[in-house]
Each structure stands twice: as structure tokens, then as C-alpha cells.
Amino acid sequence: MKRSSFMKSIGAMATGLLMKNHAFSESMREEYPELAKHKIDKADIISLDYHWPRFVGRNGSKDVHGQYHTTTVLRVRTDQGAEGWGMTDKKVVESVSSVVGKKVIEVITPKHGLTSAFNTFHYDFAMFDLMGVILQKPVYEILGAHGPKNLPVYSGMIYIDELPYKEVQGGIDVILQNCAWDYNHGYRQLKIKIGRGNKWYPPKEGMEMDIKVVKMVYDAYHSKGVDILVDSNNSYTVEDTMRFLDGIRGIPLYWMEEPFQEQIDDGRKLRTWMDKNGFVKTKYADGEWVWPDANDVALEMVRQGIVNTYLNDIHAYGITNWIKVMPILKNSNADGSPHAWGDQLKTHYTTHLAAGLGNISTIEGVTCISDDIDYGNYPIKDGKISVSHEPGFGMKLLKRN
Image 1: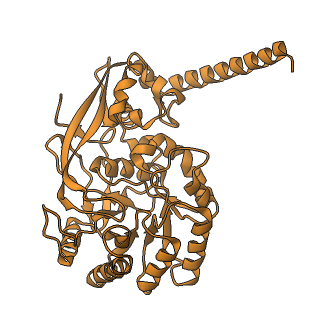
Image 2: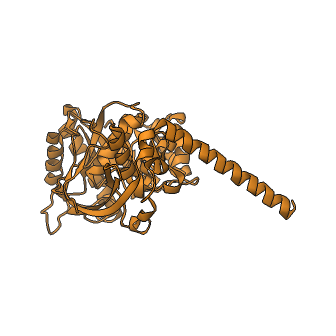
Image 3: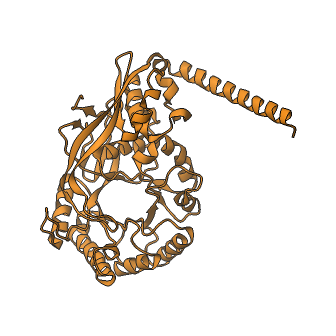
């Protein structure tokens, strides 16, 4: 093709794209006039303190997680007096000025989430919250209200806590004490960290302790209707995983999470072994930290029927990308359960995603306490968490600056 013809072709494509985007923008303005009225006139970053109800130890790959933490949030305000806020990253300070002066409809829409220019987790939660406040609707209604309003929830806080640390004495009884706290709080699913032989024990002794702990918790709680989930944090091999599952054979495991780094051949080998060895009902859950990308191996494992539950982190992935990926999961007879470890904000965001889009199997519960955050009305009772019906996410900043 001659250069002149090529440039004309590119020009025609660009003109067509601009016309398409303009038509899309105009249709959104007509459908949601309130979002077109509000212009963002201020955006700022706030650091908030929170803590977990207990000290949290190691998992199969990381050292102690501690107890006291901070989270970074973005707060946005409009010229009409509306305010929204949500988790972000400190890096957003480099680009946050780009949303100032924009109409809300130029940044986010109910059906599609963030527009292409702003599609990053840095803006996702603050903008969904702001949109809900303006429209006077909870986020789950904006997303379509396709899922249940009371959803299964599991405790993600059962770690390798028998090992001592300077803040804690340790001992295997500590694990049962932690399970009791979570059960009394309302959880009826307990996720147990395994993979001790990767770093913290000799391999043989670590595997034996993994099996012992799971059997111990199951024996203590199966009569109370508690489901057991396990998470290796990629610290097993495929052979380790099969050895572990063989060691707990007879326990109706809800899911096996992140047994090893996502890999299609080993994943297929494990899924086939599970189906033939009494774990056909056990979900294979993976994809916790994969950026939205065409080379997402975990998502390909979903498409091939290997991974049954996709876990991409609710914060790092964002609601906008979960809107896009959910049809792929449904078409593959798979479900989602976004990783939410670390912060109760993430648990509550996931609750809206689940109640809004549906097809979420269970929610990772992370109980937190904070003088800086009002976490809103999301009660946990008898193994289920209820979504807030307040506008946006229904949570409030108690720290104002």
C-alpha cells in the first residue's frame, strides 16, 4: 500500500472511532443526565489506619502479616457537592489531576464502568462510589442486581499460626482458637493456609502438619456445618498437591486454592487427578494476581475447564474489568470469587460485585477495625454477608483530612 493510501486509511479509521465514541458519549449523557451534570472539581489522597482483630502469621510463601496497617484511598468531589471515595494506590498522585474538570459521565458509566482513558484500579472504587451517591443507588443496583443480597462468606484469616513470633506464643491450639473466633463472628467457611514445607518446616514434616491441621479443623467443625477451604499460595508442586489431597481423603474440601503457579499442563493433570480420586466436587481456584491481559494463563485454564473459580484481586483488577471477564466465566461454566485479603473494604466491594453481577461462589471475609472508617452495614450471620443498600458502597470516611 502506498504511504498516501495508508495515511488515508488510518485517517478514516480514526474518524470512524471518534464518531463512534462521540455517539457513545452522547447516548450515555442522554441516559444518565445526572452524571452529565456533575463535574469533578477536587480529588485528593488520604491514608487511613485499620487493624485486624488478631495478629496474623505466615502463609506458605510470605512471612508474618502482623496486625496494624494503613490503606490509601482516593476521594473525589463534584461541583454539585457529591462525594465518593475508595481504595487506590499512592501512585495515583501522579495522574489524579487528570480527572479534575471532567464530567462524571466522561470518567465512568453504569453499564461499562470506567471509560477507556481511566480504566485502572486507581479510580475504580472512588468513581463507582461517587456514581452511586449521585444516582442515589447502591453499587450492586447500578451493576444490575443479578445476584443474591445475602452471600456466602469465608474467613481468610486462618494462617500458619502455630509458629511462634515475638508478638505471639504460637502452638497448634492457637489455630483452633482463631477458628472459634471466626465461627462466633458468623463465618461458616474457613480457609486454612497450607504449604508449610516450602519455607517453615522440612518438606516431609511440613506436609504432615498441613494434613494434621486440616483434619483437626474438620473434626472440630464439620458437625457445625462448616466448609473447609485450603490455600497453598503457590508453595506446592503438582505432586505435593496430590499427596496433600490424598492425605485428607474423605474430607469434602470446598476448594483448593493456588496449589502452584498457574500452568496449563500441571493444572490439567491436577484437575484430572482430583476428578478420579474423590475430589470431583472440589473447586480448583486460581488467578489471584494476574493483570488484565490477553496472556492471562489462569483465564485460559478457566476456558479449558481446569480452573473452576477465578480469583483475580478485586482491588488490582477492579470492578470495571470484572464486568468484562464475567461473561467469559459464565460461558466456561466457571464462577468468580475475587481475592480480597488484607482489607475489609475489599470484602465489601466484592459483596456489591456479587450482588450486582451474580456468578460469585463465595466472598473472602477480612474483618477489620478502624477509627478512620465506618465500614457500613454489612452484617455477617450464619455464614452469609448481607450487602449494604445505602447509596454507593455505603461506607463513610471518619478521617476527613
